[in-house]
Length: 427
Ligand code: KE4
Image (tube, rainbow, N blue to C red; front, side, top):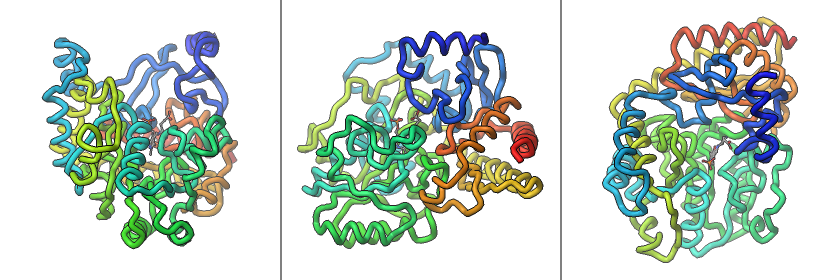
């Protein structure tokens, strides 16, 4: 048995499925999860010493690669003075000021500890601020595992084949209405059928939990118009796109204003951090200055703030990394398409910014229904072919490939070489 196999045999006895998050269990692709022992730049190493080019990047946080020296230094310098106080620290102020400086249309931020918590809190704020109960989300979009969001969810919920989780009560789910991504008509019909009842529309500006499905031209702008027309708030869930598509995230990239924005992943630099943000008028409705309650023992944790702030400072000082990451992702996407054509493989590749996803299907993937038609068994085979060639992809069709600024041309060349061989092995 490999060390990863030995560890997994122990893990399944004390952790549900042997993991602390379902998608890591490799159930959608088969085989034994690799237990990671080290990450450096664009590479990770497992317990058996195998090295991989990493396109999971902790599911998005490692936008500058693993173990970035400036981020490690910031953590090391901060931690020697104590890890957590439950009292205000200067770092939280500096972090909020940095986010307000980088992200359009926000005046205030509240730090929390995960993307789930950020979305749960933003939804509560939207309901509290509007006095309305209902919420529109999109089938296949994933916004974390708070009850109201586990209705028609994507990511792991989709991979598990249980789009609606057990344990979510009818009461918790009844106010969550389901629309279709890239289908403005489905949103308008729900708004008109529930007049003056919809507190918010929540959307992933790029749907990155059904694979990667970019918004069609006019979709996000159309949501803005519909929300304005019907008095609903527009929530951009930027847990993935925030600080990844552009320094100012999807609002900057697409030029569309959201009323509330949720963040996670990148703002923690690898540490557990989430946040929600909006105008002063909205955010000052949050306790202790307003009637919408939300709290957290480790919210704004100074060590996590040190890591996140260090990462944001590098991203804002070096905006050229966005063009580099986009070019890297486009290089991979172009070569995947070439290989698929060469080998006659039915394959679609969606790519936007540093996000991309291969689907094994004939038709373009521009919505959730099309994504679900992808051949997940073929994806599983592709995943394992790539893994055997030292390329670590998401162990599920319904996730993204995350390209970082640390991926080198040699990484890209080796990736497309492995992909060509893997696609050839599929047909
Ligand atoms: P967390 O609670 O996992 O920090 O964030 C939830 C979340 C919210 N919104 C969006 C758009 C997200 O993508 C996520 C979490 N993303 C998944 C990957 N698709 C996390 C990986 C996992 O669940 O293990």
